Image (cartoon, rainbow, N blue to C red; front, side, top):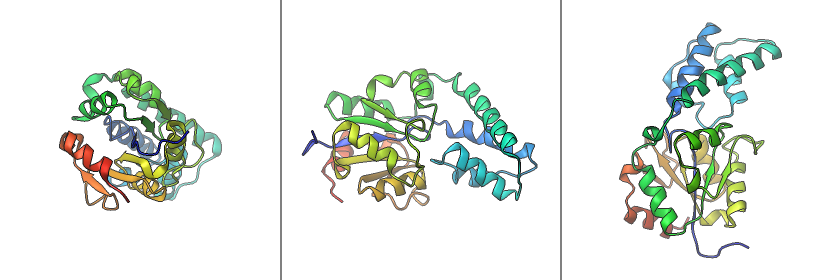
Length: 223
């Protein structure tokens, strides 16, 4: 049954709740350099919200390299192992500023909350930072076939929460994620650089700027 008036919230994970983007950057950089491909933070920005396979394809294209399918899969596995070594050292200290306060307020006021992430390690990360209990549903890279900017991950979250897309508010830190939310007619909230996330309905540098009054503004907003 769809809720008629209640707004729901969907959070991306990497760069929104925790700063795992720095772990991805280090792991992708090491992989690229092993192939003699230069890899900058600007290029890493283009991989945010993109699946592991698509990210690997982009890096190879930037370096004008062709490798066998076997090496492709081997390098992806190595990248993920290195990334997970960083993840396994995470704790509640890795939760980004203001996130816990926002989640607590939404939970205490009975707003439906879901996670919508391209990461296949989302549950593992949430366990490490002890935030599992805040999310009614987790939709991650294991459950969707289309990468952002396709809105599949967010639409699935809406369906599980029982809300219409227009009644949903999405927090994202990537251009692809903002496009995905906008493609589904959801309220898009960019967390990060306003210039990079200029297509978002709202922009904030971090959750530290999102007070209870701001949350009410988001809740009352209509596309």
